[in-house]
Image (cartoon, rainbow, N blue to C red; front, side, top):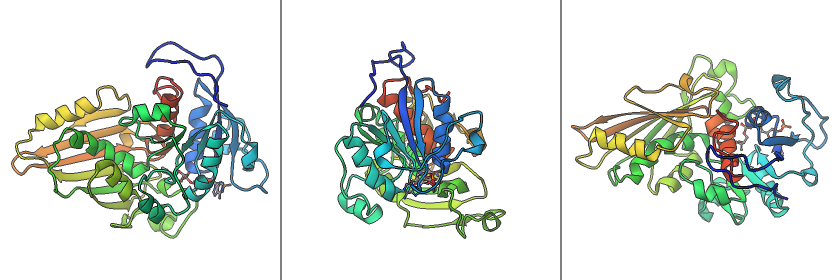
Length: 345
Ligand SMILES: NC(=O)c1ccc[n+]([C@@H]2O[C@H](COP(=O)([O-])OP(=O)(O)OC[C@H]3O[C@@H](n4cnc5c(N)ncnc54)[C@H](OP(=O)(O)O)[C@@H]3O)[C@@H](O)[C@H]2O)c1
C-alpha cells in the first residue's frame, strides 16, 4: 500500500513523482483542521480522504479552510480508508481501536493521541486503558531525538503537547549529563484553551477562562508518565490554563551538577540542536508564545545561576502545530524520506 518512496536527503533531490496519499481522520477537530491546512500546501502529499466521526452525519465543508482546501469531510467508515498514510487526530480510545487495523492493512499511521505513547504496559493500562496492546513498529515521534526510529516506523505515536515543549528543553541537558541526579525537576506549564479540544467544558468555556488563570491536575496528568519515560526520572508537573486560544509556555526548574558553567549549558543546547531546523535557541533572551504561534518552531531560552547551581529553561511552542499537527507533518516527512522542513517552512 506504501507509495513508492526513493531516498531523498535533507535538502536533496526530489525522489518521487506522485504525491503520498494521506487520510486525515478527525478532520473536524482542532488538530485535524491544522493537519488539513498544512497538508493542503504540502508539495509531496495529497489529501485522499478527510473524515469526521459520525457515520450518520452528512458530508461537510470546513469554512475556515475555504480556498485553502476545497474538499469535503465525510463520515468515518473504517473500511473505506484507502491511502498511503493515515493521520489520526482522534480521542485516544478511537485511535486505540483504529490504528492497529490500518497498520495491518499496510498503511503507515501517524497517531496524534496518547494511545501508543507509553511503552510500559502497567502505565498504559492506567492512563490509556483502551490500548490493549502495542503493535510492532511503534516509534515515539519527538522528531529531534528519535529520527532513526521515526524513519522506520509503521505506527508513529506523536508526542503530547506539554511533553514536546518540556522534553525539548530538558533532554539536551540530560543527555549531556548536566542534570543533578536526584534533584527535583519542576515543570510549570501554561497552555492555551485549544489544548483541550473543541468540545467545551466548564473549565474551557470563554466566560470562565477569559480574564483568569487556573492550575489543574497537579501530580495527576497523563503527560507525566510520558515525560518520565523519556527522561528516565520523575518530574513534578503542574499544567495551567491561560486565556489564549493557542500556545504553550513551559517553565522548567532544576539543578545542575556542581561546577556546570553557563557556557556548558549553552554548548549542550547548541550541540543537541545543531541540525534541528525547528528549534531556535534564544539563550538569555527568554522567548514568548507569540514568537511561535502558528509555526512549527520551539523556541528555547535559559538562565543559569552559577552560585547555586540552579538552571531555568523556558520553552514555547504552538500546541496545535509543533505540539500536534506540525510535528506530525515533520514526522511524516522523515518517514517518507522528505526534507523534514517540507510543507512547514
Ligand atoms: N488540541 C491539542 O492541542 C492537541 C495537542 C496534541 C495532541 N492532541 C491529541 O490529538 C487528538 C485530537 O485532538 P483535538 O484537540 O483535535 O480534538 P477535537 O478538537 O475534540 O477533535 C476530535 C476529532 O475526532 C473526531 N471524533 C470524536 N470522537 C470520535 C470517535 N469516537 N470516532 C471517530 N472520530 C471521533 C471528531 O469528529 P466530529 O467533529 O465528527 O465530532 C473530531 O474530528 C486527541 O487525541 C488529543 O489528545 C491534541
